[in-house]
Length: 396
Image (cartoon, rainbow, N blue to C red; front, side):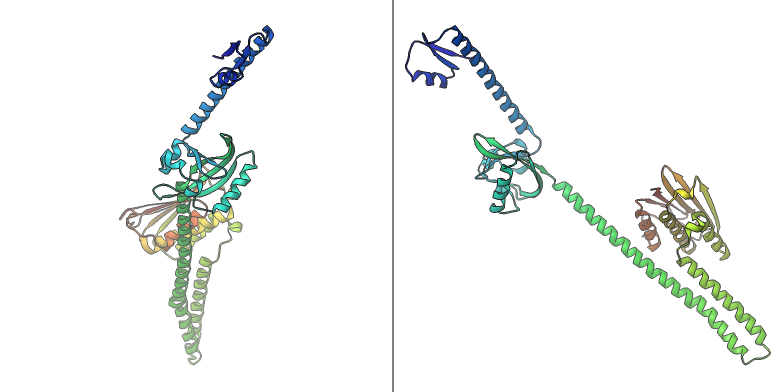
């Protein structure tokens, strides 16, 4: 309740004592009228109301400060000593309230020296809005180093310049980002290794084809020609045989070149290119039935780079099947499902244990090509049950 002291005493010491003890005003009898008394009453009531509002505001501020789930503290802008800290800071950093108040900001901060800290504090004192300081390393009581995302705001704390600090521990986020970067670098390294291995494998295969096949054919042709030069009776027959062998060598070289040169998918299309692979395998007389199943495919909606990736995956997996699966039947299904291009290649070959099988260069290549477009690869197989390779690539 607001209190106004009415007295006949004119002692000047009584007035300040009364005010210190809680009175809102001091009036001397005979020196005021009803108007002055009414004004004193109104002012006293208003002062008490304002005081109560300030007390409630301070209480609300303290509740917001103390109950905030993120560490917060106030430090002196001159000495950097902690003036106040909330429960979250005490719990997170491991210091008691008294231990906090006996330390300065420099005691928990790892980066920067006192001169740098002074410059930062001087700069923040001239800014009315809060300033985001960024990520700074702090040391907890147990010696653990954390990364804190810091925000500063200059305030007036008990009539002295101070800084209010909000600290968000982002150590886990930074560690996860570092792990993701390491995984990304590791994955990039795997892709690079897969590319190099694929190139070496391709060169080895070309070398074998040229040495064991084309070179032998040309060698036999050369022998026939040399013999024909000295044998008049067999000349015609030898030259004809030589001609056949040269034609065979040309076809072999054409086959090798076709497997190496990027197909003109823009001109002939993805589906026709896959059909060409199937025709080549039929001409090679592989004892294998290959079926192509197309569902809801519109080639003009598929970007050229994705077409090339799908073509190379079909090419790679068919080579894997020919070399390892001993399959008699293969199904190639190409479809569009929910904005994804889905390629499925299934065979009835010997299969393998997916859990124990180490990914060879071919499978690694398929996975690497697919991941370039944020796609997915799924392999289902078991001994004696064939293999199903499913590749999903986003349309865009």
